[in-house]
Image 1: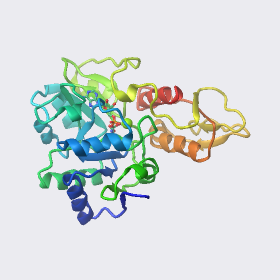
Image 2: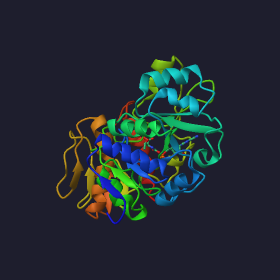
Image 3: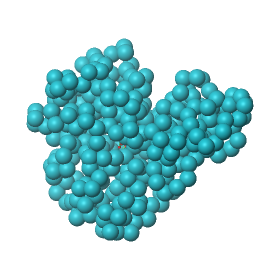
Image 4: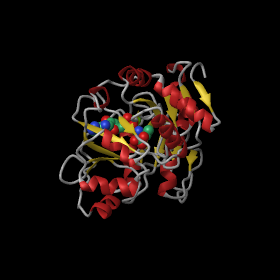
Length: 321
Ligand code: TXA
Ligand code: MG
């Protein structure tokens, strides 16, 4: 690390200090079950501006506000439909972000000028401890995008955050080490500002799960572009990503364990299931870059489960930077 304080022991004391770091307007990178986030006090404009700087991200892209408890969303929205409450009850803490009409607390520097705000209760013991300590100091929520440079692959380990961002962090900023993220792809984003919920970004909470809990039929249109993660140049390693062709000599290769590795091909991972595929995908893409491979071939998993999210990210990764 050239800068930024790498905290590996997440003791109660370290959590309290990390919360003070947020309150003082500095950044705290922290683990969640989906990917690592780069956090700032969501009510502090200059702290939030530093997130955009560190990421190299355009300032009109809205950020997700992370809170420790579903009750806390009442601070951020005064208009929460019943189906959104049902979703929150069933899937929080968890890999789901709800888009709601914003309250006055959610200012333009969080929402990118939109009249809505994204909210999530993450399911990770360190993230929840950080949010709880921050609340004790009067904090309302932590704005956090994925802790990668704009357009890159999201980080699922503290080491990946350090590789991405250490040169852009200040000595006062903190990186909390919390092991590898268990889900591995970003949260499902659900627009809850209309009569029925609408998936803006697929994730571990699937269309079927949303329908089961809300009793509302929804349809997810994978081609509709709604959020910044949906821009073409996203989730991309330096290596070229090519989907569903036969890998050639010297190619990196990612496929379910049941698919054999042809001679001369560099196997990057052999996940046993679709859940496992999601968990290892981003580390596998990163390892292609670490090995300076020029091309990665991925055989996409099929199904209606988390594989929908995997195919969404791979499609965008395959379009390159
Ligand atoms: O799993 C996750 O969601 C991770 C972890 C750290 O929580 N966060 C994450 O944040 O993926 P980010 O900023 O990389 O992606 C958030 C996406 C962006 O594409 C943003 O445009 C969209 O959420 N978003 C945030 N607020 C929104 C809003 N009010 N309306 C529409 N989209 C919104
Ligand atoms: Mg991101």
